[in-house]
Length: 132
Image (cartoon, rainbow, N blue to C red; front, side):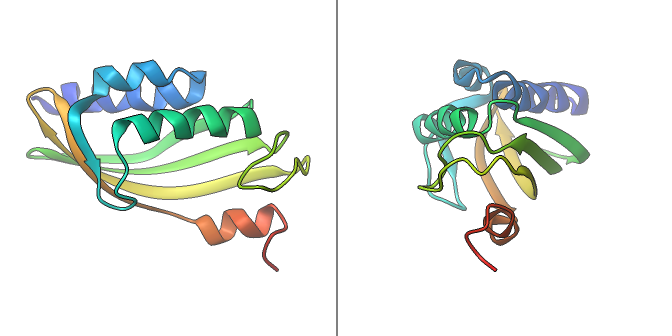
């Protein structure tokens, strides 16, 4: 894949989150995709989009930086949304949330086959009022 093809594929993945369309992930991820951070599968990632969109109906995820080299990319991203539905057992707070993260992906045969990532979950829980 070219650098531009990898970037375009990654944009479709973020489009799935921004539009609440988990089916778009089928265009991005290989059927044997594995998320090494959470040991999640593609089906779990699709469910995570559904859950997040109920809790944060206006959720937007933006790409802050993307670096592509060889068969991998590194993306620094920011997610923002208004907490207007239950999330992780926390009732809607009406608070605006901003979470940052980094994802590293490996591409093979036109799809992402594996990822490693980290997000500021502690910061998110503080914004929701769960942690001091």
